[in-house]
Amino acid sequence: MSVHTEEQGSSLDTIKLVVALALLFAGIAGFYYFAEWQGQAVSTLLRVLGLLVVAGVAIAVAASSLAGKRFLGFMKDSRLEVRKMVWPTRAETLQTTLMVMVIVIILSIFLWGVDSLLGWGIRSLLGGGHV
Image (cartoon, rainbow, N blue to C red; front, side, top):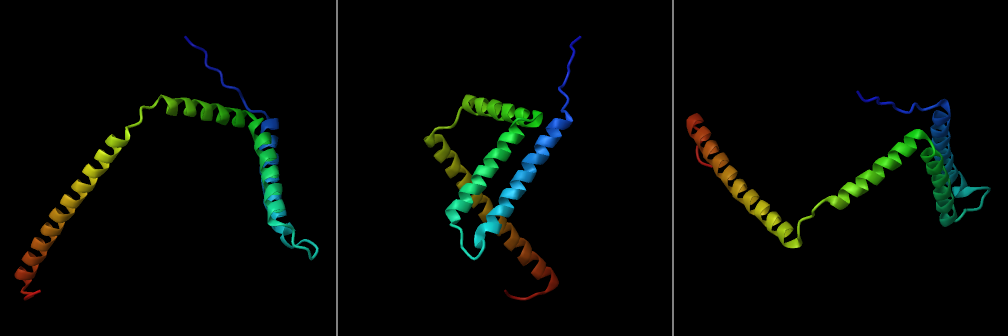
């Protein structure tokens, strides 16, 4: 019998996530607020840098919560799994792509032929004439 316990998030984690979200909103609001601040146009570069700094702080705050730690663990595990994958060679990829293109062209011609035949049959039955 195995005992599986999960860590329960505390209210502090909820506060951290709310603070991170508030920081993001404040950063976005500040980006637009300082566009024409007191009659002077603040450089776009400074506004973008400020937004990136605030976003970085928000990400750091969110990463310190239990949910953030779980997400970071998931991302690390995903990266390891991607490294384990065997990717096709360039030749295999090109060959597969060409096979798909040929099959699509053949099926397109076949479906066009079936559509034309059915259209001709319906027009003949309904007496639609020549088209």
